[in-house]
Length: 521
Picture 1 (tube, one colour):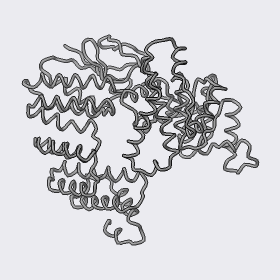
Picture 2 (cartoon, rainbow, N blue to C red):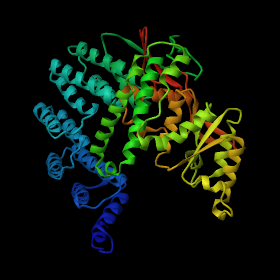
Picture 3 (tube, helix red, strand yellow):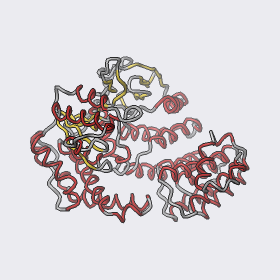
Picture 4 (cartoon, one colour):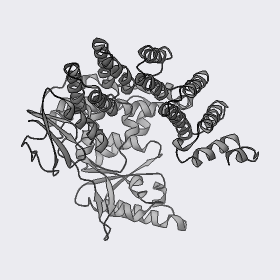
């Protein structure tokens, strides 16, 4: 089927590869020869000078890594090395592909090979993540090279301060459970406890069934301490474990960390608006663009450095000291100045709502959904940010095209019953939302299905987890509508959803309401 398609000259090469990519249900179903041909097609497409969209590039590179993984899984060392060399020659080997190679040779206990791939990554300035260290650490533990394992583990902890990878620590704990012996248990226990504390510090989501089983495996494998594991159901408003009566930790953030978070978030918002105003930045590749963004964020963060000096004080002091001054940069002020003036004149608000995000809850934009969700907050002071097809000119346009009548009626209704602000460009709407949240010093509800993960990617691990914990307690995430059109939101969480230590053990969240209580027998 693929060969016949390749002979059809009416399709461009890019269209052919896109067709193949959609046609492949799973790489594990393809024979080795087909995998290699598909990989060569992808490498050729990535190098042919065309300008595909970012989503396609990401999909093709993920498929390349997937093909590498299949060769590793099938233990086809020759094809594995052949494809990786092709990727190196085309400069398409990324962190994921290097990590697959390291895992493969870690399973073969070839330390020199694993180390050589790690060193090669550093030489080629490929940014490595936490998971990159796992093959090195586990192999050192297998070979009883405990000091080297500790050195690599320290590097893993350092990398987690800037980019926390949840799965890296879960994988490490799983590996420790698999290789544990009476001789190495003491070394492994120290590393596992540090991993659990890191999951407690930076985690902010349930770990899920599979990862929970990995952690259970470790506790069941130990002989030094006998652990009793009990699965318990916990209501959102419950503060105690029904098994051990230990108190769960509340989903709160200290005032000092909130001030630090605001500083970093404001630096991010201003730097991105400045970068988007500079067309040259949009033309560079993603790696350089992300590096540039981080550099500008750091400069902006230095501008707000006085925030870190605030250690204590009343809520009013916090509001006064952390209030943001208008930037002198024209491009930033042109975007945020109008919103800031509006907030000064009409605020503060209790809730901010992303109208476009809510309107597209189902296929196509539904104005009635926006109205129903907005009315759920009619007893609060609600600010509705409008972007995309919700244009300000619709309010005064007359006559209105038939396709826009419902949109105009929605805007007139929102204008009469709530507060609305027109963002203009949908490219910048997320920054308006973030700025509104920062303006209110996080003392505001947020209505949207968007978890803003693309923006959190650029923040350090502490800022990221603080914002996500704020989201868990303050964001209304639309889940569905009842038969009488009442919106249903996911429950906002009072309990911190992460691995939690207790005086006599640990609590592991499989979901927001289902936990594993781990206690010494």
